[in-house]
Image (cartoon, rainbow over all chains, first blue to last red; front, top):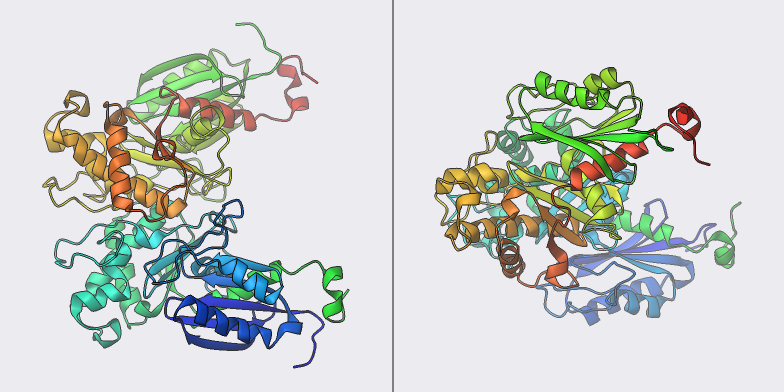
Length: 308
Length: 308
């Protein structure tokens, strides 16, 4: 691969199931990428380091967009670490230390959903908006919140997936969050669907009652997000959002739940919408965040021909 | 009253039950005040205008801290108005227009709880903090959120009191919010207590089971606030927070509900605390906000002796 005028940046989307590495540009274009299964931290981080080491001379900075919770508060003694997570072996992992030591480039840690919010703002459904929420509903539920063009609490990121929305009276499933039982994630993430209906979301037909219940839970989530953040838009992504008709059901249940109170000014189709980024919001957002971590131009002139 | 070197500022705390007017300083000190019952908008606004008109030559700017929802988005066609409220006669009132026309000074509108958050930040329990939430639990439930030292969505303020936290399984009361039934406000504001237990909070002894249920609802609220905003502190005020022991119960139920997940770094006593401002957070915050609306010094030199 030939040298570029600007250094490449690296991004990792560290998900609970898949670990994706990309080399790209500071404006979020992916040049090459690799995806592998997330196993134990040593093996997984090792694979990622191998990917970037193979392009070491080109790499100018790295952003790791990590499944939460992670400590992204620069003032914290645990800065750069994975915090309490039900995922075996990962709690306490010093993500920043591992990658920084191995690759020797400026490295930043961000939550995967915060990176996705950055991606949606720059390249996706939130272009031109200053106040929006991105939520992914998959193995877990997590959200990135942009307020006035800045990530909410870039120090201690929110964990809105664990909010309480209340179990529906017709739902006998007690919830499966290992921390909270019937919090939102325990009732409406992928594992909850599987545990309640005895098959995964991908095997539940579009007319199965599962989807109306799912829509009611996600509508309550959207209601709480609308009331707590007063955003211009809520963008929903993740594997559990794929079923046809689910988005429309959520909008309809949301309108019913809000009952005319503080409703968004525009059409509901503009207020609650799907991510148009084919699952690349986080990795492309992480490239953009890595770009912001590049050293100033003079310091990186040795990496290629500096542009004026 | 003798002329001052700096003009006075005016503040109104327009609550659902009481309407409080104050003349004071831009750093939040009250010089004189008057409180009367909130009745219909014409009579109430008229009384407030009379109060300020009596001190007209001294008044440099006014901030109205109003019960929500109010439109505080300067780009909105309804800017300055009271929005959907169950309070008869008030929806659609052009607050800014009425006071601006009558008093002829720069006038700003803010939600009462946003003004209270400003007051707590400057003079109360949140001094020195950049990320905190103030919540009042009274006739309604409302919150003001400060993120990185700025009010959350100073354009379209949140209405977090109407979030869904889920009705408790041992609570047969269906909720009494006219919009949402069993949203948080419908389950835990003053009118809900009265409707569920057939007497007001002030008549329920400290060992009545009402308070444990109340603590569980407010703990869930605190949980959602902690997860959604990752604040440094949650400050609870309002009439329904007065009973002895309630704050301690909320902390204990909060710790139980969070179950070790993303818990605040410091002591729980520092994370969830009572307002120390004796109910003056909103009116004093509004004086500070009015101070920010004062015209630059040259323009107001005629009001008194300009200080250098």
